[in-house]
Length: 459
Image (cartoon, rainbow, N blue to C red):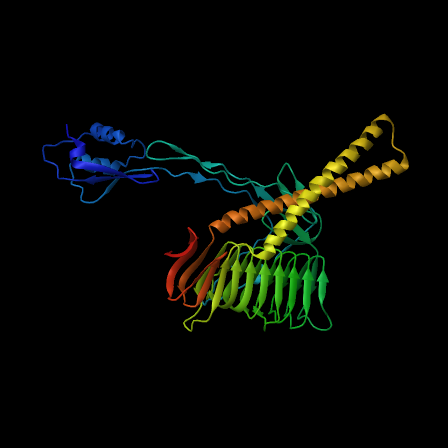
């Protein structure tokens, strides 16, 4: 019987997911090794699962091992998928790259309308994931996907049995991560001009031309502009889509409750609670996103100005060879922190209201059981019921909002800047109170905060 410890040693990875065999001296030809002997020796070191057949056969056949040989590999846990909303109407993507570094946003602007009674979305349930096992046979628990409660949006209803959303009106859809709204549409055939004037509308606004300097457009839903936005002011409760880019002249301001998508931003100021996605370049602008700023599909340049994202910034190049000062910030900004505080305040207010109204409603219901309520008392009970429903809706809304901030904070801890090509000197990178100014170019880089230090690693 071969004394294995005389010829080999085992190296187990710190995560217990791999074991490598290292040969310390050459075996004699007469030293035979059986499979049972090999497995028994590995077992002495606790290695019982994920044995690699090819490696075992190589050792049994007496082959000399000149470099560490992987003899066991664990099976990692596969975390569950998060629940999400799936659109059932005509959806769009912005990946129509024509090979010249330009992306056609027509599919973003040409969203099909839906009709009353149409099923427009359904909830895809979260999954549990699949547990794994390490080479010692210890189970690795999978993290189940996050779930959410499907709630109705504006002008929609929810079928609880189907977990589906239906439209209550003819209109245009605006989707967020957990809710679907349907808005009426206000459409401008050409440019916004003096005949049209400033626009304020309770639904979606579609502009088939440009928005010149000096005009403002406000919409409860989405704003879609086929042409350019110059030094104008656009405010949307939903998302903003600009087909031909933003020429801000340091006068424009765009703010979206969800996302902003456009071809380029030049000397503009843009804010989105969700993601800002630009296909060409962000030049000398102020861009703030609650989640991500992505500039990777076309030319993908970010040069000058300030770019701030709650979770991540992705671009092909950041800065330039002329070392134009460019500032990057990762982490929740002050505006979002204020919104989080407001949601906390609304949640507490709604909880207090529900307790107070619940007691009052019980008094009226008890009275109603003994004898029908008189006209005045009946009206008061109906008012209390209405206030109770409104408080419940505020509680649900603020709770959902706080859950999203919790997820956002988790992502921020893993926040990073991703550079697909080059990031140049004179780029300032901030992670909260930590700052690093680049003095040399870096390529194919992932920049993150590790142990209170901003580090640069290769992609």
